[in-house]
Image (cartoon, rainbow, N blue to C red; front, side):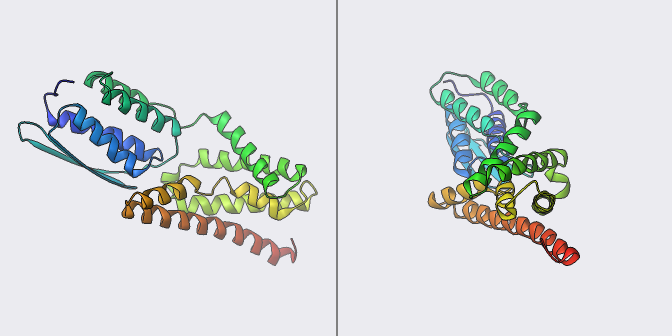
Length: 259
């Protein structure tokens, strides 16, 4: 593959790709490998990359000795496996020489425009997940149906209120509190049977499973900064869910004397 004219263009493309992966829940090692692959594929003499869950530092040096560097602050984070998969496939095609610079840039721009979530499937599968988690933890079919509707409502709340506006910590407090409140009401009026199973199944939608997996993966790979920061983030999310659930249970108990 021919060397591209400017290091700045190659660096911009590499940083855009890495930022997309990081914003959509990808591991830091994948971000670094993708940026290095792009730099080397377009003839850069040296490529440097360093990623944390909240930022990217990248640099490239052309064969003429000119160096370009960028620092990207990543504030928006979500989970979209489709974006990560497509960028991963694209980097493999680039390494094999199947795509050129213009094609790569166009594809990255297209992937960046992919919808974050499709509302109806997200609501449906959120409810299904909550229902089956309730069954997994020992709840009955009646409890699973209640968890299905609670899961749909929690998912709707998460879609209606952007995390960037209220903060992930408070969003998880709100989600945990809502799950507990709806579970208590459903048991109180006879729709549900096992309060604990319904709550556990419903709040599983909020549990940061991917963050915990990435924390372990990054730590094993030697990316200690990313591993520790993701681990702390997972703990904070778990604490927030517990706070929201505990507050609602305590208030209900104080007002009515029983659950």
